[in-house]
Image (tube, rainbow, N blue to C red):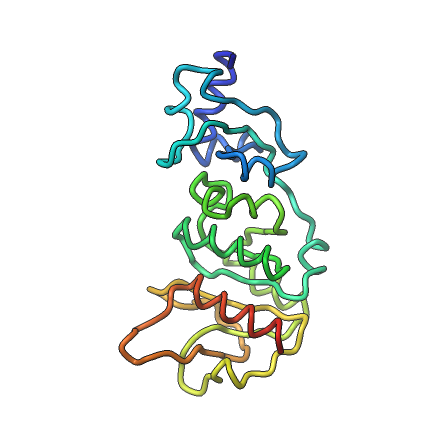
Length: 223
């Protein structure tokens, strides 16, 4: 059975402040818990508490959840990746979770600028636990340009603008940085790089950022 102290902690982890102060987050569902591995502090099930459904955040019924240590990553872990995805202002938790899955699938690292918190239960869930295994770092907007320049990698900007190169004919020189922005505001970073775009029917205004990154990461992999 869960203690009152454990129940209180779990409730706190539903808030960003609680996660930041404790260094812990929630993992919901067997698959996500398995992805967390040794980071798991303790698990709890429906049989452990009569208020289980109030302690989890998912709308899809789950029978198991866990309190998990938030992974911390050194810059060296990011730099070990051939591709580092940079998200500029992507605030939808579902998109960020899906992009974490892409990073895991294409062995990429992730830098976030004013984007959804990766410890948000919605992000953890939509990432299917990938957030526990993908080297990730949140960087403040006022310092990120210096951080990215210090990596000394070619920069590719995923955007459709005058003079941008169709991704089908782009040449990628890895290791590299791949920047993507939100559908509403695009890339706000004022960093010079090679702009590449994905060709699609004119009836569609723009691709979802997750879909666009899936195409871009695959194109980089086969280039």
